[in-house]
Image (cartoon, rainbow, N blue to C red; front, side):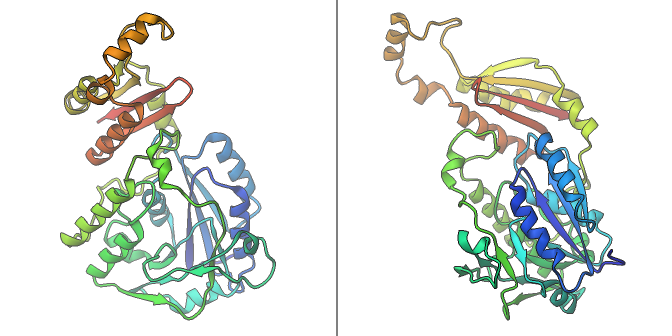
Length: 366
């Protein structure tokens, strides 16, 4: 049992492999210094997975499981960590990850580095698939450089003073570099711990940017990493220290989420460019207060058209340039919606239905 923990490890999570969670948490069980606790922030996993994870975590008494109803939004590590920052009762916070395995001496070393005026980040050893499952001293294939700041020790008061991680960053990339840049602007020093490799990254199949070019139920949009980097550079050039609005780091309650997703569809929008553009740039900004729901479907030239008919084939030949000039693909609609909603700060839920080839958008106007 842990009394008066000094450090809170924050694990952001959504729909991931439980085996990786187990290896990471087991490495914390093996810590020589146990002066820590864990906040496990589930950022909108599917309910079946959420129940499974919550049950699994009961075997680890130092872990507190928190679920936020963030389904229908892209993965946002910043928001998940911010929830943990606000809930943590310790003076220091470690941004962790379920992919990490910690050396038994790691937490003891953290206690010696705890400094309210400094943020410390650590190099990570990347394990091969074979090494990930080894039961000996790890031999990483490669080691991260100083640009990798995903595993960092922060003083909580310093994070609170800048309103935490920037919640603009979606999917993957730039949030760690940005938060440390803003802390430094606010008078906090930074240090790269390079003496030993005490953190190891478990092997998993690499993420492929190609996935961002395909319509997926895992919400994302093409070139999202470059949008994130653009925002990081903007914050740096403008020397911004505080970000986010007053509602940062808040848990979304299930009741609120259920009210939103149960809103009935009020309008269907086709992927014809004029329809989508008019909806985004005119209708959406003129919705009255309340919850609204819309369905987006692929543009079809005529209702009840027989796609195998000769007439339809003739129509497509005569209008083969329609797709290039007049119609968005549903992937393009998906990307336009996400970018517009995220940039404008809408409260929304987006569902991609690959089976029916449609999108369902629900927005809450306050």
